[in-house]
Image 1 (cartoon, one colour):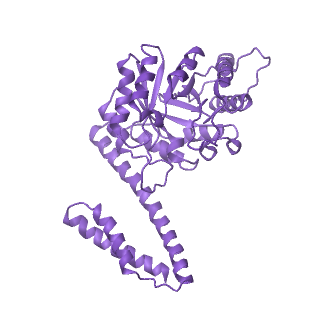
Image 2 (tube, rainbow, N blue to C red):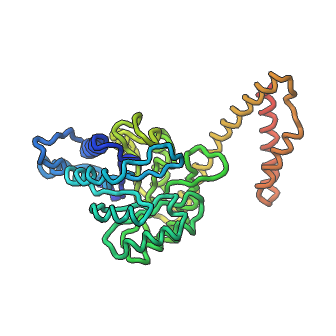
Image 3 (spheres, rainbow, N blue to C red):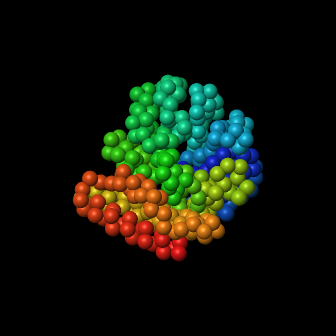
Length: 366
């Protein structure tokens, strides 16, 4: 059964020709469930489906990779630059993959167009700048190019919808939104907070724009990606983007969140792609999954809180400090009260919860 979802995969960054080709071959072989080596240098691996009749349950819409990597730390790997275009051209010819590359300037767009790149994506740190987004949009006016727009790094739906609209306004017909999570002040169990309510609001606001989920950046590590992917499908997302690398342990960037090709296909096989259609059931389904996501975070944060309590107990014991410190606990209560709902039921719940939390924390310290 074919899945009518947008699937995008490839390494975080182009590192070398060998790394790109091994990753592309690994994805192709696992997606099409075949170990295939061309018999001669001129034979294309993409012909495998035609010559052997192999039918896959999955189709890879784009092979993605970063050519330029403006990392937060200037000492980190910054990408190989334009030399990667030659490698990507050969991958496109050999495997039949369409190519998707991140751009952050008009100059980047120029290089992509000169090298027949099929799609470009606008990164989270670029989306926050409307001036820059507009200059990039103007440079691709009316071109038959697919443009993917990641949400801004901060949770601002208007910046996101505005960036998308800029590309629609210049005649780009194929625009896709990418949910990659948000940087928020409070601690989160993921690398970037999913804040599912924002992409859901996006789907309601721009119902004609497909939205896919970048599971790698939200999760920040491999084990959490299946949960993120399934949640996105539960909300009716149109596809997934994942970082896949032939040898993640040697990757020059984001190695902890990149999947092996075999892990990538296993993840796809584990997902239920069905979406409920009944309006009332689907509305409940969305809200229950929002609660599920919140409960996952609460459970992990509560465990983390108790671990910190244990560390505090160790410090107090070493310095002969009392376990009970009323002034400190008043500060904790104030934090919760500032964010409390204005109704008596919630206030009573909060009072009961904080009492139990305080007792449990003191018990652990003693």
